[in-house]
Image 1 (cartoon, rainbow, N blue to C red):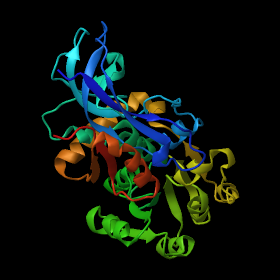
Image 2 (cartoon, rainbow, N blue to C red):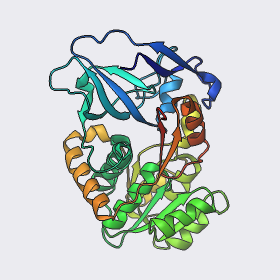
Image 3 (cartoon, rainbow, N blue to C red):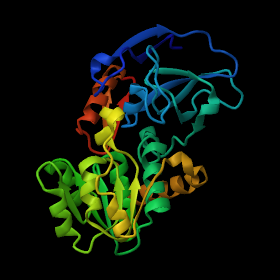
Length: 336
């Protein structure tokens, strides 16, 4: 039986980007397991953009206090149980935090099937903040129709890449916006997007006019800022703008810059709607069923980038903030 846990705690609240010196990695003894709780050996930890607002003490995400373990979704296996219905060896997912061993109330956990490959898929394609979020944003908000033009920002990231693939499955023509030639090539060559725009080297608005001369029908936004304005300026009549995130704004939440071209919505009889997947709890089973089927059929691709070792969690956050990853970014909590 393991007797210690190693966890990542917040030691200084960031004023802009959360750099590694905002964290400390500590190893502590485990207390005796209380009745009604379980102990989970954490295998993979999700690295998500929303963590920025948790660390800064702003936004609708649950906040992380100084000295507290960084909140994060994870997957792992039960190694000790004092709760009825939870057996040693069961695979689970939930809010396990950035730590190697999590001691939790199992009401916050879900059982998962461990027979279909790596448990990491439950943080990526089948994860709430990733695959399910993409499904809800596309199917419930954007509703692209066959032949319509669908544009997605941060398109090589975890949510954006799945959103674009779902839109393709639904028959849309998909244009992805991402940073750098490697990501742009990944979108077209691997994911099968119809076109890609490298915002680092191309004029996004000009390229959108070229690629979508009749306008954009659906925009799935993960970035905000200048990218959102460029798309608003190129909307088709009765377009739908889906606000999933705004990663360009998370470092200055006290001075978020809204869209300057929002009047295009009125001019083109269009709408903009924000969401979070937990606003659609009744649709989560359908989302996971579709995503699982598409994975099994090979119709959905979810790239994974995994950093080994709990001590690399702060590094992983920094890697994500600078746009270094393609697909789903995770940390493998322990290495053998």
